[in-house]
Image (tube, rainbow, N blue to C red; front, side, top):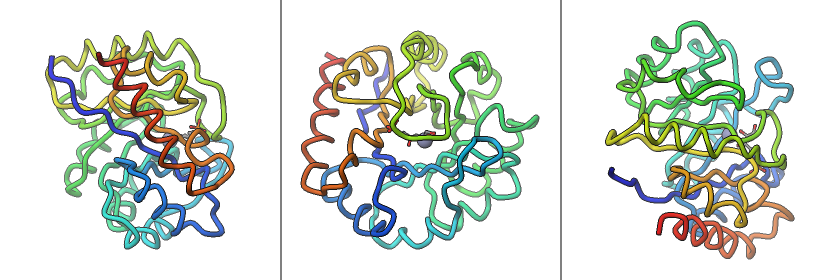
Length: 226
Ligand code: DX5
Ligand code: ZN
């Protein structure tokens, strides 16, 4: 089986929003791979974050890959706005609407990588009929809506299932929620190659801490690969 490279994707949900541009620049300088961007609508999830206008504002700050996680329903009418704002990948939740296949086609037609996110209670089998339309699987290891929650251990079993289902396809497998340097090894060993980390990178919002934290998570994940 091909193993895609380990990528660390800090979630800017835990950034200091009063100086968001600097916080994005800081994780870029600190060696992140992707920038994870959480979009919440107060309807699909019980919290509200921000929309395309903020992505557009931070797009000039970094060349890094913008991994946009839509926790919104409906999704389709907003996909173009997120693509235009500078998303590189757009992930929609399988639970967000009745027409996942259509949403995924729309994302690829906009020239972006297409992802599907699954809530903790949603089985991996929810994506088995759209595998040829996706570039990224996002397994939620917390119930979406907030940063700083504890990792749900059942996600490890779901990761193994996702890894087996993906086989040799070049699909990134991402874990989102409660990732720390202490569980990154197990998470990578179970099959994840993209690790989202919000509070475990940004906690305290001291830029000089971001680099060592990203490295600690990366080293633990690489150990899980060995
Ligand atoms: C949860 C978001 C996550 C979150 C991760 O709804 O999708 O991306 O910001 O934050 P931590 O790493 O603090 O669990
Ligand atoms: Zn997320």
